[in-house]
Image 1: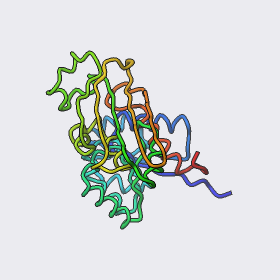
Image 2: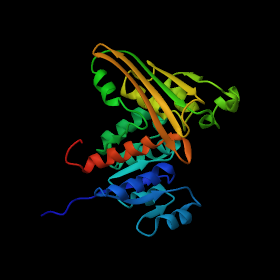
Image 3: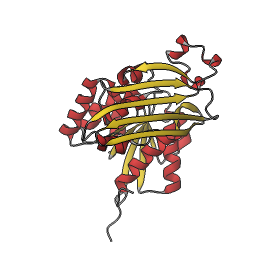
Image 4: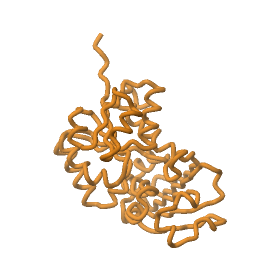
Length: 274
């Protein structure tokens, strides 16, 4: 019997998302090996101590690619997408992006698609902390009349964003819209909170025809965030509400974000889509 081929992945970043990927693969034991992690300069020794000797920890992309991963997984920032995505894809290595807000820049989106085509690689875009994108992708084959995405997080999750200067976040007592506008602006102004705004746009009506609202809601259950997706098309309507658990150490990111990334990677090695 032929030996099962194992998927080799490398991670950019070692924060809450990457740590959860390690946990999920350790528990579920898919034929996936995390061969390396790229961290900022000065973080190598501390990260290596946490991960042990089986995983290479490096501080530059060249060293990461020397590990010959099948997929490089971005779990860091929009800047990481901008800095390294084109190089990875041109080398024929699949690139999974969760900081999709970077693609609020149409030129970057086109550049990465072209690089993927040239390198024979795939740009992998997991759903993140939302559901319903499968329906949206199918509905766009017809005519989309309206797509609206609403991201709802507790007021403290919007700390360090433009909302902090426009609103007295600790004093908010009821659900309050802190941003209403385009996906590109949401992704640019709220790079750690609103990547899904661009994901929804790219899956559906595009950057110019997708409505976005960001909401600070103090009435959410502790440790949670939420979202709503509303779609009207010639094939029907989709209305979806999600309440999810936030990362314990990062209220800006939902647990489902890491789980959708893990599931997309495990789908590569499964013998069916389910």
